[in-house]
Amino acid sequence: MDIDFPYRVDARGRTAGADHAGHVRDMVELVLFTSPGERVNRPDFGCNLLDLVFAGNSPELAATLEMTAQAALQRWLGDLLTVESVTVTSQEATLRVHVAYVLTATGESLTATVLGGGTSS
Picture: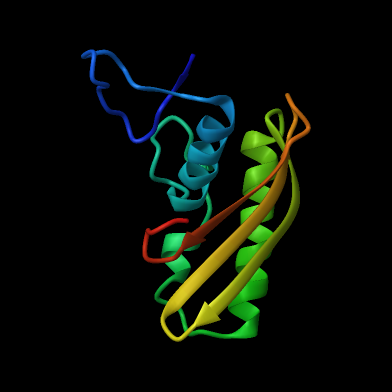
């Protein structure tokens, strides 16, 4: 059973579960929204997405984030997925990170889009 994130209790009072695809998507968000140094036992875990949200909007920022996000996802989730692409777009004060990946277990192609403000779709 894969645990749902964020952690919650289901209607039966047990730890809520998630299907494999949903669990991997939750893990993609975890990697993107965790800043390096935030986890004590894994100080290099994460991506600089939240640190770059307040940086000046530029093509250089988007390219930097694309590379750091793809590297972090490949490093920490490489056994669960294959990253096909990471695309970063900026609209005014919002960074939109679009990740296309393939689940290793099933071969299913999926996408995840997260916004720099912490909202995802």
